[in-house]
Length: 147
Length: 168
Image 1: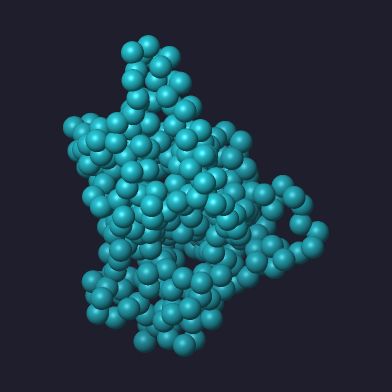
Image 2 (image 1 turned 180 degrees about the horizontal axis):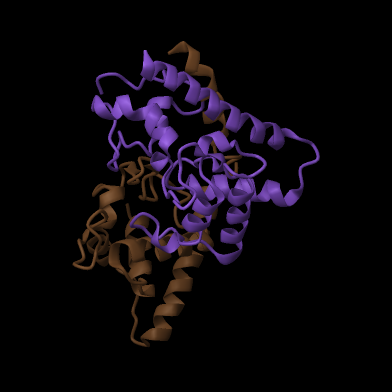
């Protein structure tokens, strides 16, 4: 066993992610960035429906916990990987831990529009097998911001 | 005795395959393009799973995998066009059959086959068969999945016993 120990260290050292950005923002800066993203989706929602009145945390919660009929077997719900408790660490199917989605636990959540877009695009296709609407995205963020 | 000998040999092969690209990564004459590709590859892949070293699959596999990220093992893992192109270039340029790889990794793999998983490589099976047979490891998704290398090998190089975690 000791014979093979060192090559694995070489292997695993290579697998480390290269330089995570060490960006420390204040809670206020995060909140402002998140609000800008919510405003972005609100504008989109209003465009689609002039009667749009605002996002709903309750609807976001239902969306998060739902098991849509269209879902793939391995990923029936958002809560499959994120767990049903937004304060918990989640886990991808490949075993990687996912930081809690609740903003109170992970303040940097939903503060980068490109990141938010990327993950809604991917995960809506994976769980709902379609793109999510601006209202669904805004509800989701509103729910997580309340958590 | 036989499994042990195979195991030792294979690990040497893996180490040799990985030593070269690592030396390359430290070379001062590295071009910015390669550097960006490596960073993108590590960042994007490790968002969901460990960033498997490109040296552990042939170029044709990376083309098949990164060319179809919208359908990535049952999930949508799509990226923007520019990022996709960068990680594809990096992976193909550092694949097992590239100048940075070691063709020994592909020993026993028919050239007409395009493995989508490192666990589909004959050499991987030779190394890990005993852990699969003993039930210490599973090919199914989950914590003890074969895709979760660091579960047994340790992350960051610490804690790897090479023999798995025994009874877990």
